[in-house]
Length: 299
Image (cartoon, rainbow, N blue to C red; front, side, top):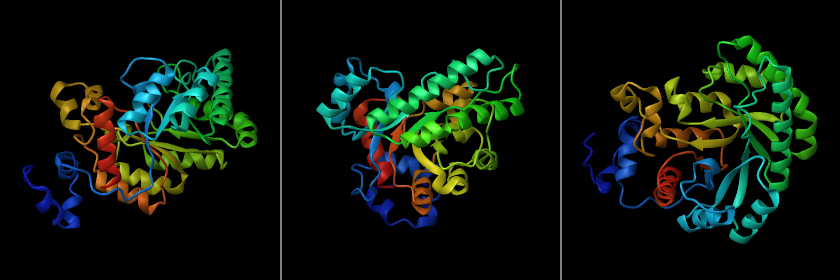
């Protein structure tokens, strides 16, 4: 498809053309204005990726000014400060990310580290309850030279199951994120992991960018279906990674300029009934990210 295609020509193209993975993101990015908003998804951002300095209140005011409606907080913050900023800005808190799960993984061979990780999981659940949200983000474990896949599977599930009574009592779901932890890299393993835990209080926090290295986001969405409780909007470029010879550099692609087929992704989310927040975890100015989310929601 010619990248100089006009917006009028774009709107008259057939749906089969829109399905082309490489073309759709470029066309969305090139549009002068996003189409009228047609989905209820809140525009949100992950706290750790906010590219402005300042207090919690100053950052939330910047988010509000850029057009964001919601935010995913980190755990272990000053609850009073967060709640005051939320009240003053009117932003909704739609998720809390456990900020200790990499340093204190539930899969660690050290029982003391696992205990610290479990305590962090409990605190994250309590933070979510305090902020009025019903979902937390959890990286369940890490496979490395000291931890096998099976050990990660068994240890993480054991710790998560211990947290289920608290999750249920608080009304907060533990949502597992697909990340580069050498653990769950296919959608069938993700489904099996949730099936093994077998609890409505453990669901999935789907990251669109993280999965590009391993598979197709649309396949994952269809497989996980209604188990998706939150979505991270993130870009990844295979071409960029290959060009510089570093897989991590693929995350440097601006939103709407990577491998994600956003019209296809949004269609798949529609089909499984996902109408929750779209949480960007992406570098860039707040205004550019907000506008990109508008275009994704309208895709």
